[in-house]
Length: 51
Image 1 (spheres, rainbow, N blue to C red):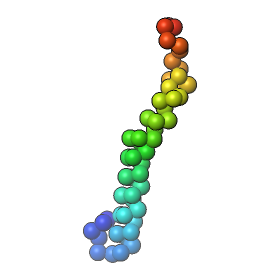
Image 2: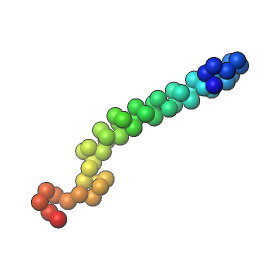
Image 3: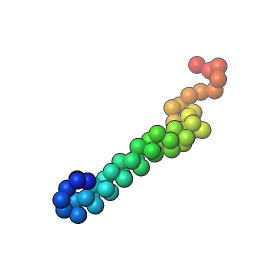
């Protein structure tokens, strides 16, 4: 879409690429940063030493 001859297709291609890049960054950085302090709540882990 980014190399399409029509300008609206190029615009849509740019927006799709931007959305994919933001999603990639969120998955790579924001999601682990949120899950780290919420590990016990998210995965149901008990306290250290408990089974």
